[in-house]
Image (spheres, rainbow, N blue to C red):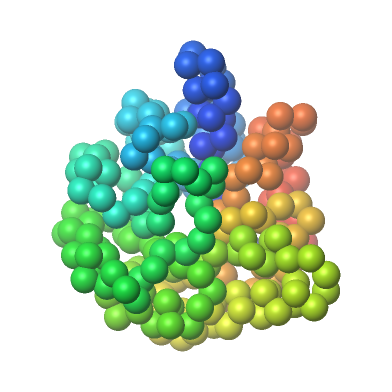
Length: 239
């Protein structure tokens, strides 16, 4: 069965709206794991708009599955990651103005800088994933600089309207996943996946893990975290 990792950033977003102590993303992570999540994801942004350093420190102590730190490729965040030592990091593009990650990492044009960070993390015993668009050139570049994992950006597929565009974008995801697997990298997928569209991506043989946040947290507001996670796992299992 495909693994499911849960991004709990939006729990922290709600907390930070009041600059208070609740809801606690660490507690949300515990509930997600109890419901069967295979990993926990947080994005420590440069502006600390949601997840805080203390959250990351506590999650490192508490997470029993796998802690995946999404992060920009900056020296300050790299230092933090090396201090916390999550199980893996996922390098993503980051703009201060964006509401959410808007696209995949441009690996081709930034190979030297990304390769240097990958070497640093490997020396620290930390796996590295690159969040990339479903583009074959980006897949090849990720392989050249020795990424362990690629996470295929499924946002355009998730936002597609109509059968023609949906099939086109799904095809791009499938082709990228097949090439990454053929080159020897592990394949994850995520961004924009929800209870309506997850099964098509889950059915891709080469995809080992799905990274989902917003839709599960949105569902959890209404039915609770454990039920929201279990419902998503059921859909993935059926696929």
